[in-house]
Image (cartoon, rainbow, N blue to C red; front, side, top):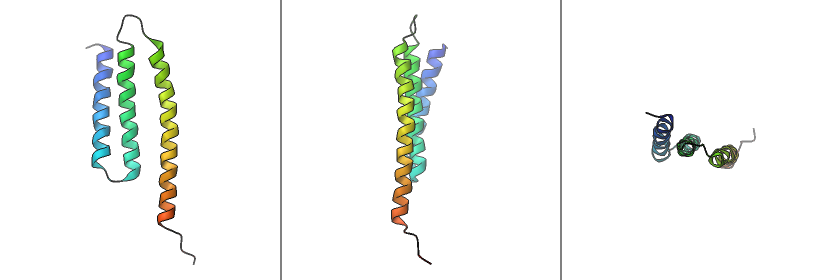
Length: 95
């Protein structure tokens, strides 16, 4: 079993676990984490495909790095939206 095949198999497994989490879990923060797990699985498959040839291709590696930055920014935005929605749904009582 080559390293690229191992990365591909674990990437597909991570994507499946994340997809199950998105579909099965009702808690919003856990759904955001499950989406991140899906993204990590996609990144692993992408890197496995990029490094499976005789000479590694550096463009997919750069795209994965960019994708990681976008995923972190998207996660931060999603979590801030969850905090804001929870604040609007549960107004603080003046006491």
